[in-house]
Length: 113
Length: 120
Image 1 (tube, chains in turn purple, cyan):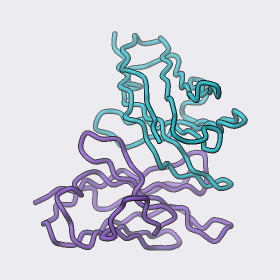
Image 2 (image 1 turned 60 degrees about the vertical axis):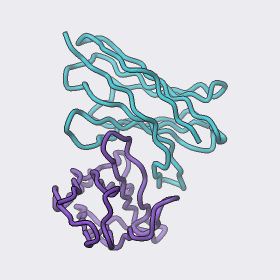
Image 3 (image 1 turned 180 degrees about the vertical axis):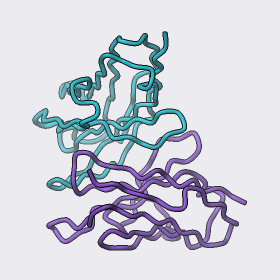
Image 4 (image 1 turned 30 degrees about the vertical axis):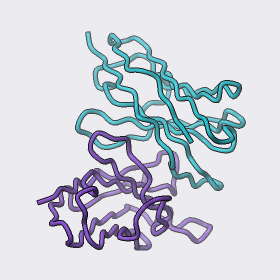
């Protein structure tokens, strides 16, 4: 199975400041279609996970443009340009290339300082 | 789009649990349904998925033989049954609608989750 590793696991942030989460896969996530099959989900406190970003850099419906995704091969990054209080939660990357299984990262807990 | 899951369950070790996931607001058979669970304080764990059109299923190797996902297209409902329950099956069980293209799926609508507690 492809292993997905996130860092950091905890990220204290100051509102208005940028934040960045890294996701590394044990194998390239390049699909035969030419896309990298790496998605991001966020689980806000007390809520279900929700899709944030798909195929590396495509924002899901309703996701503000302060969120951006980038990367290729085995290295991917989720960035928040200016953190807001509502961005608190646990962020997960997941690989969707060699499935099953879909494998999630350990999660990165974003909290306000 | 609405994904509504059944209520919480408490089961004894060795028992089975069957939880439901009712979908509405879209063409049921155009999207797959996945199940993902989350043990207390732990990360998300993918369990399996079903093609709601033809009933095709795939499961996690770690749960193979204990998990079964089925669907009732007339009721636009998917069921997940987990058998031979153990204490480490205590978790919140989520179902999620999947948009897919070929083998690529992403989970674009999630239910609120069902708490399953396994305790003697």
